[in-house]
Length: 366
Ligand code: F6P
Image (cartoon, rainbow, N blue to C red; front, side, top):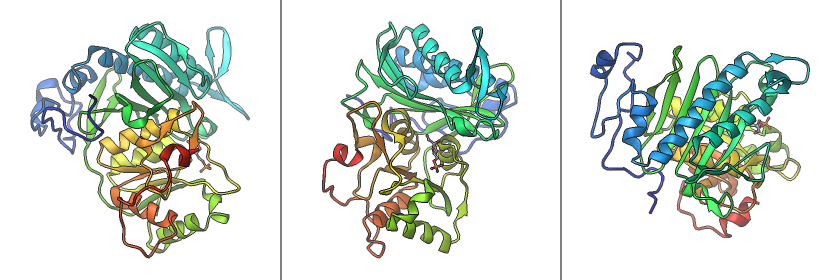
């Protein structure tokens, strides 16, 4: 049976804070690292990490294939030319929008991995047979494509499920999840279900990925990223929550790209990201392609996630349709508890994460 997110695997523990010497030679970088029970070191290659994180060779192959696609997409994003309406790049003989180029690269990588049964994406929501067996993958090839032209960071998000199914599953069933972040640096961030922590790999000039940070705890701290902010006009609970952040002098850090806006919680080990809906602003984030994978990344790192004010953990929501949408909050446990309290309209009640659900999660996420 698959272990739950955040549980330990074989007592493995990884150093929380990277020693900084990742450019050093193999021997010196190992010397700089605090290693606990497991042989996972800052400065390890992705292959070295995966060999420790999972005994499953198919899963290792799948994550390696996704990392290779991420590297190729990083190059395409970096060299795209951006006009008034879209950023394009050449793919074959055609000029294609860069998110479609990324989509094609990921499907190709999954086909050649030979360990993928089905894959679907935000661009191609119906699962396509990949010719392999072992895992199925759902991905958002380039989240934040509307901010590629402004040269903000954008990213790829993916979730990996064992078997052939991409509906009738929950985020908790994921074997792994990951994201590529295309910013001034390119990083590949992954969580393996059953192995502690969420792990960040930095792309080197020679094309290798080296482990630079492992996050196992997310603490409390005043940093907020309020998505779909226009919802405060007809969602009084969200309005009160945002007022709380302002009154308490939280630091605003919001780019409008879900990948960097959530990634900062892992890097800073604090903060909260919200994308809340209202009667006039419906949910736009997709559970399968973006919300569930990011929930595994945050929860494996010691954070929490919630879809609404009724204590609906994002990892427990059943995917009933590929394009199912939901609102979401990610952050430290305290921040997600606060979100739930405000969404319930109980901003003076004491913080709790254990309030019983009133309706089934799947129903509430629709
Ligand atoms: O996936 C949709 C998306 O681009 C996310 O990356 C981002 O968090 C969100 O939209 C931004 O929404 P808004 O502009 O409404 O805050």
